[in-house]
Image (cartoon, rainbow, N blue to C red; front, side, top):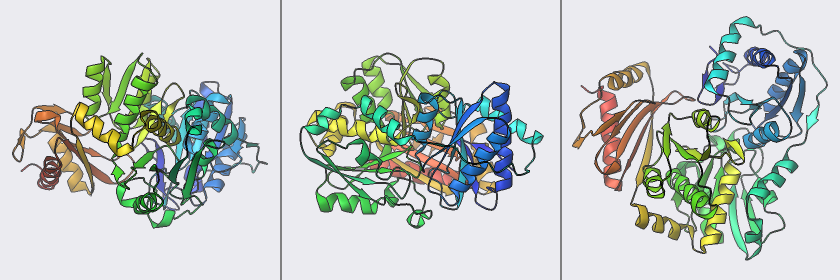
Length: 462
């Protein structure tokens, strides 16, 4: 069964993700675009197994359907593909990638003409159209290629104060995680005094033996390298470059919630972008609420998935949108997550402050309070899924010793306690997992909430 998740359709290569199923998805996508009189598309691809071959199949489908179609001339990041749609005159785009999923997966991300992830309504039209198309192979056309990287690099440099990186020598370690972001930060910072030391920047469809997801357990080499070379910080991007993770100058992992906070503060205080609202997903830090309340800026909370942030971006003015998974978007550039621009903005903030990243985190805690966050992923069999459904229908009044003050069900089940602490249960839209999230003013409370959450889900609340 072909089903789109929080950002595109993903499946295991040779099981669900086959050339036959890919052909059907591309044909359905093409038919929907035809109905809205779109005629020009660009197709990009990542470093995964057979990605360039899958991209060529999509190209052939669109050519067969009468579209003016182009393939990127190299493997690209998802933000590069989205950039090409918005800034280079396309009605839509396709990115062949499974993003941060394990190596055995591949996927199909739809980009609409505005240069961002397809809206739920557009995805729904594509899914409905699947019943009306076949999997017959298209004609094998001669590929037409499009260069994207040079124009993307030039545009990104316009949004960053490149001059500040010419003032002093700094050393940054960039971990491409064997994905398509490898080497890109160095290219953006060319002709500055920033030296970028690349690690894991080559292509490896196995991604070193684990998912190319920039979470702490996958970044041991980045932490070690930062310490070894005495770098200003370490930066990691996921397999398709739309997510980012940070390591401070001491080699300590900076959780994604704090990256969200740094970017939020940088945009409203240093970039002075204050017209519009801030959007966060349901799994994102309560520090965002505190900052927005103090600054008099409206904050909106949406379900997980950047497409839900885009729903608001397309309707009204948004300053910044992001999510706990390390994906942050800047509507003044793209209605899309961009791991490279996120990294550059953090670097810019550190340079402007003139203090270390760890010192900045200390200042934030002093100003807005402590926030300790953790996520636990539980394999989701049918029993666990049914227990979560039961808990959503009948939420508990207490979780262990913690009294529930508020319940939110916009995406899974979110339980809010004293001092803004919260616990969230939600099914992953990309993997067979139930994610359990917690945030609290102390690490002990956060650990306790995660433990109680696991027990609650295993027992079903009985």
